[in-house]
Amino acid sequence: MRTLLLIRGLPGSGKTTLAKEIATLQKGAICVAADDFFMVQGKYHFDPTRLTEVHERCERTAALAMRNGSSLVIVHNTFSQRWEMQRYMTYAEQYGYRVSVIDLFNAGLSIDELVERNVHNVPPIAVERMWQRWEHDWRTKAEKQVVKFRPRNYRPEEA
Ligand SMILES: Nc1ncnc2c1ncn2[C@@H]1O[C@H](COP(=O)(O)OP(=O)(O)OP(=O)(O)O)[C@@H](O)[C@H]1O
Ligand SMILES: [Mg+2]
Image: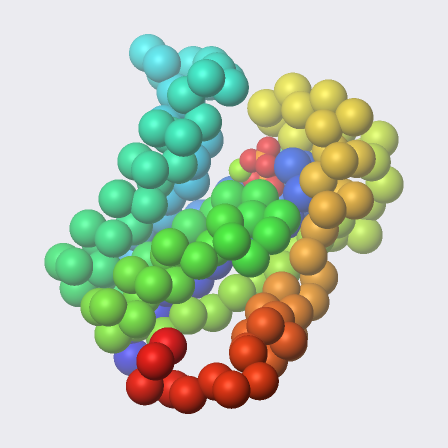
């Protein structure tokens, strides 16, 4: 079955390295990350004012690959919370892709080690913030929310 693979992890956890290794195992695999769209003339140039645009371009690239029927589409963004993965999951449903998530989180490293490893110069305070907001239980939490916010007189046909 065609697969959308989301690789999530803190900066420097090894997402891109793993994505590229997995892609070599599957002919026609497509790898994409939001960071790809911060590349200007071959150099990484982070610009926070472009975050929305860059993420939309990443989503569109993944959606196009699924529309074209790539056997494996890999997106390797930080994805600290479920909502960041949601659009990819919606596209996967639309195009009949199975979704797999690999969660590297900190890859067993400390904040200092992650900062040292990451190639995008993400400062320690930013890594720490992402660490704090990391949604480990992204799947069960979402399911719990559906139950929690369902009104008492809930009728499916009105949803
Ligand atoms: N399993 C590993 N063992 C040792 N070093 C690794 C491993 N995976 C990746 N690295 C090294 O760690 C550094 C960061 O890896 P990589 O760029 O893949 O991380 P990333 O999660 O994509 O980071 P970013 O969020 O900044 O894109 C690279 O120098 C890479 O060679
Ligand atoms: Mg990367």
